[in-house]
Image (cartoon, rainbow, N blue to C red; front, top):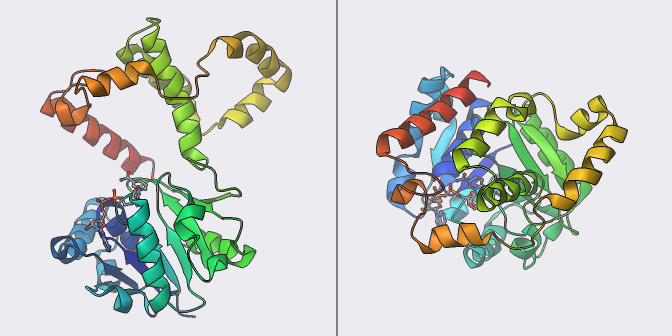
Length: 298
Ligand SMILES: NC(=O)c1ccc[n+]([C@@H]2O[C@H](COP(=O)([O-])OP(=O)(O)OC[C@H]3O[C@@H](n4cnc5c(N)ncnc54)[C@H](O)[C@@H]3O)[C@@H](O)[C@H]2O)c1
């Protein structure tokens, strides 16, 4: 049986990586981008990644760069959009994709945080539209959150879950289209408390990161929080929550400490200063440490 044909719209950081995963899994992948330089280099970037990872480099022959959006999506069974995080652009793009794509094609957005409902609300056939939220780099981080809206059919969810599982990903069904889906809600709940600890002088930024990396960060990849709660006992978890929850950060908006960093131009790597100071060498070392760790745990 031939594998579903994939179309990827946007050949940037995420788009080329998503195309790579599907091509390696044996799918024909058409890819398009409005910036010629990004489209023209997509295959070379995929080939370089495959080489670096020791994956089958011939997979790149299944990737077809196409300048025209209509041509890219016309024969696809599954279309995934990975253009800039811009609501108006995504809405316009899906309206155009729908005029070219097959009636039965599933249409997915890789938005990080924008509501899928808002992106897809103008479509004529909203039952085949959903979110697939990949994590960077797409070829190293297993998770793909599959987000349905109130209109998405169970068939579209099912097809999408199976497609990504067969391509070696770990799909997770997000049953309600809530901001941040699952992963970013959890991640930013942790970041809120991390910033609060620094804001209130309980420790400095280095210490927050050191505590996580030397303690429950070590376990997180193999022990989720709810598994952990069962492991220690829900009664103990309840007792801890009674003591700790009244004291931890619960403000609804961003931290004033974070707002002040941004106002002062302390933007992190891009300005060399954020919660901490970063030389170019330290930045390169951190990026490389993360990449090598993800490669090892693939
Ligand atoms: N970078 C991440 O870590 C990450 C993680 C998960 C999801 N996302 C989401 O994925 C999407 C893409 O992010 P990215 O980091 O790959 O961005 P990127 O800037 O690297 O790539 C976006 C690409 O879209 C192209 N593009 C812009 N308008 C287009 C159009 N009309 N048609 C076709 N191509 C067009 C750009 O030329 C560019 O190549 C965003 O919605 C982002 O929020 C990003």
